[in-house]
Image (cartoon, rainbow, N blue to C red; front, side, top):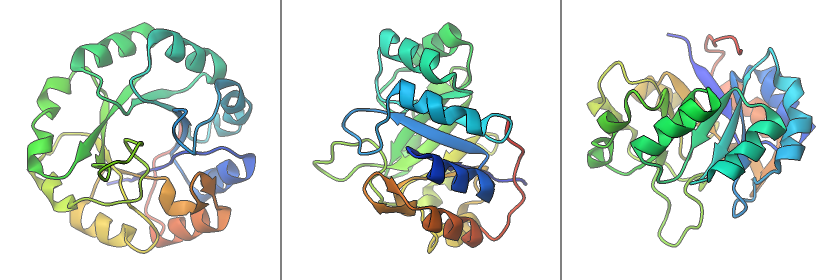
Amino acid sequence: MTLDIKICGLKTAEALEAALSGGATHVGFIFFPKSPRHISPAEAGLLRPAARGRARAVAVSVDADDPTLDAIVAGMAPDMLQLHGKETPERVAVVRARYGLPVMKAFSVSGVDDLRAIPAYRGAADRFLFDAKPPRGAELPGGNGVPFDWTVLAALDPDVDYMLSGGLNAGNVAEALRLVKPPGIDISSGVESAPGVKDPALIRQFFRAVDAKPKKNGA
């Protein structure tokens, strides 16, 4: 099985190039003002061309309304939208139809009970992302650098397409791949030298830790 790798929360050309050169199949740009990884549609639009033909550009938002999504799509022309808030299945379906783009729906997971919502989203979302539940008092729904018990994903139907996220780094990604064998992985804070500051050296270290797994070509 090939492995998709998404480096998320990119803000600089240097970090983006490190992700692309390392073999990222997806690169993520975050549009959420509370996040240290927040970027404007115009800034993302300047970075996005470097990914064209090399990786899928993913626009990440949190409970965004239509005008906000309109600006994001117009500003950067993403290949995929990632909804990381409390969007309902109906909202996911509306977003997918409005923009004609595949949608990845993120879920916060701490135990197997959190996976029970998945069936309602099948047919609305094209893919899922499973992240750790944020620590108590955290303002961010993701990117908090904490893992969850990955083994709960064994309860998923085998045909569920997803990315594993939450606390991944060069030190634990091999174990995550061994335990879960996910179709894709997503990393953000695990390749940062400070919150929101991607470190190209850490990005390269992460790819080395993945151990040169076969990767899908970007689109």
